[in-house]
Image (cartoon, rainbow, N blue to C red; front, side, top):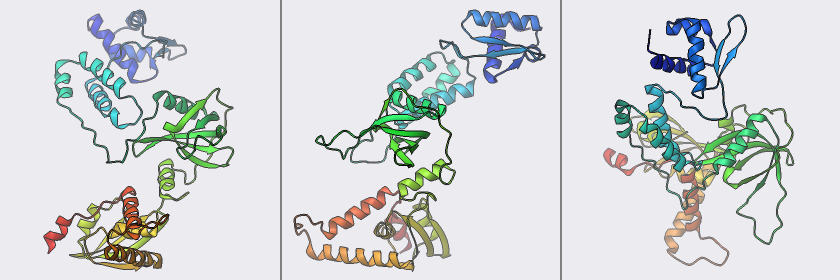
Length: 366
């Protein structure tokens, strides 16, 4: 039989592994008598662990939630996973970086030497995509409030700050929504909810939400369009309501190997037509944006269709030619130059997530 201290740790590990444990099964797993199990449970209770007894033919024990957080027991894999998750917390945008750093220090101090060495050798560097300004952090208290409303299926009321609202405009009324999902996208947190006043689905940035109390009545969950929250959110950011597909999709043939094109195409379809020729089906938020994205591949392009994509290429060609001919001529008041419009189109296509073809790949062919 194990010593009392080792036996208590083994018992605590088993109680954390599943919700309910029959007393007879615990005694069998620990190779002790049911009477010893009861005594060990009493010892753990004295240490602050809220263990409740369940009645019935298979009466047993359950590690319940208590008013305070007692010491926890992790196996090696759980401890390493916890450390990795804490180091990755900086990328969540939840405003918990400092708390995660303190938690990691606490966990590291109680780790055995063999695990501390593994954790110390792990260094994660979070690299964010370049942006004109950093993404606002969501308040952790707001996240918890929204998450509780989603879980309880309670109507939520909140003020929603808009960057387009000037100080001379009246305060907008509080939004009333049925919260369904709390999601992350591109380093930001969003609430997916049914807007009761607009009678439509909406996505709200969490960093702009100021919850009001108390919460409203409970509601019956609605069916999200398409049934999948990931596809729904992706579709909203692409300009589509249900399918999650891009509103503009076209087909071209590029004089490039399919392997080179597919490497820089996130959600397009690439079909090999020959050693240095492929078919590309790609989508974007607009036809000029799609044409600008495809134009980044350093290769000859044959437009298969549709006609809107051909017109977009022709429009960009005129704009680029005009920009090259006019040079740096100052724009007229209230009018954007073709060069500025083309640059905006290219930047918009970049935000859509498509990567340009690297010139090294083309140089290797020539």
